Length: 384
Ligand SMILES: Cc1ncc(COP(=O)(O)O)c(C=O)c1O
Image (tube, rainbow, N blue to C red):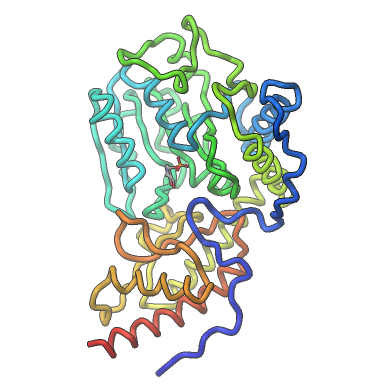
């Protein structure tokens, strides 16, 4: 039986997991105060870069003795800068439960070639932190963007660890509580929960990470854009806005505007509540329907940002083709863009629920999901 198409589309059909939807109030005119055509070393440019660092610290609650730097090449740049600069001093443990975590394993094993133990979990699961030796340097991704599975909290990370924890938190920062005392290196990009631009990465260092930087010199050469020390001392300027190379002042302005919006919705608590409310719409939707389920089995590890769903109806013949057809139909009808599962992930959908998304739009999307599911199922039956 053909279903009627839902009457209204989401006001904003942008559910991509990166770059993510911009803040609901976004307009290009809001960037008119950008320090365009000015030097980033001039007072005006430097003040904006410093404000981006200061506001990040205030909203995320980063301790005063942690350094925050704006670095090149988005989250990848920040993670690689950290791994290249810090790893090798002791054994590493690499934890991976989806494709980005797997990418950091490749970096460490195939490129840096350091002594590392690799622990992996299937898409939808996470590694059991009770098995991890935190006297090693441990590299992990807080929220697996391509699997929708996240670390529930930092309880399993000992406060008195010998090793450093290096955490890719790009799809968690501003949406999930990050335990700063358990994280020595934290990275993220502006393009995720804040809906900013991807140009730059944020690198947050604990005092112990700084101590490592000042006491250890890696055996491999470091390109200029990775270098955080000079003569064995931290280059402090990087952490007050004196970037290593030229940043995009337009992207900086855009991030500042997003941070202002973050404050207007209640800061970190407000941002987290928005992501929670968005994700709950989809979790409830899965509970109501037996043909769709969360890829993350354990509710405690379910992401509230990159919600990954799988189709579970036994009538579906080719899971990958089915999910692709649903995603395409929703895009064709301008109901949802970019919601197909990541290329390396199991077949299904991935729907961004970060703070810049509106719960009312996720609600509207669920009607379209049901409609598209029925339509594609009917098409599949007709074709058989
Ligand atoms: C968990 C994770 N790590 C790293 C990246 C790479 O981020 P970027 O492209 O901003 O460097 C992404 C991007 O989606 C991601 O989700």
